[in-house]
Every structure is written in structure tokens, then in C-alpha cells.
Length: 134
Ligand code: NI
Image (cartoon, rainbow, N blue to C red; front, side, top):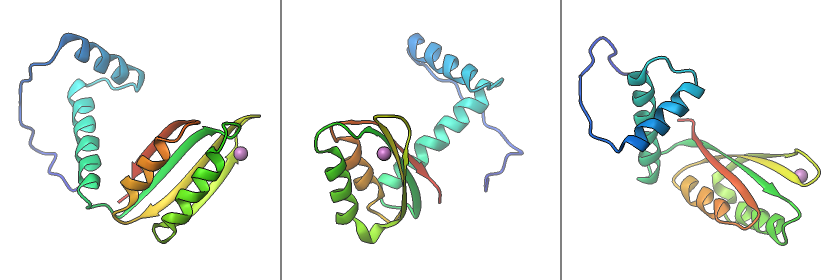
């Protein structure tokens, strides 16, 4: 997207073998048949994550998986969303199982990483993903 794919540049890298093994394992699970393609996608993701950290983000989706029975976690999540109310466009809640909840938050602007970091560090939050949209 937005890149000229007609030309490729060959590079060679020196990496710890365990890292390469792990990378290939994940790439295989994601059914990449081409390591270059997998590395390219990983680099693109790394670049956009960092552009985010530098405050060049527009819209992103934060999804958190948490155990609502963990003491205080629901209040903390609500508190964070109120604190960053001006940056949050929408949020939705799914009761996944007896104790697991999924919350998907659509946010805009430079506070997105701050919101994600505050949420991911909460006790009871098992997973926190940040997906850059634009
Ligand atoms: Ni729930």
C-alpha cells in the first residue's frame, strides 16, 4: 500500500538462530510461504507501531481481554476511559465467558498509546492489543 512493489532491495541480516526459528514458526502458523514477505509485514507493523509512539497516529483500535472478577479491574478500566473520554470514539463490551470480558475501544489522536499502556498494565488484564487503523 502506497509502496512501490516493483522493486525489491536485497539485504542480509545477522540474527540469533533462536529468533529466526521462532520467527519462522510464527510465519508458518500464519501460513506465509515466503520469509521475505513475512519479514516485510513484520517491519511494516514495527514501523507503524513506532510512528504511533511518536504521536503520528490518527485512529486505532485497542482490544483488551480481562477477568472481570479481578478486584478493581472494571472500575480502573472505566476510570481510564473517562479520563481519556475526548480521545475515545466508541467502545463495546463482550461477555466472552463466565469470567472473561473483551472490550474493544476505538480511539483517536496522540493519546492512543497512553490509553493502551494504562490498560495493559492493569492487574486482571490478560491481553491488550493495539491495532493501528490509520
Ligand atoms: Ni463482561
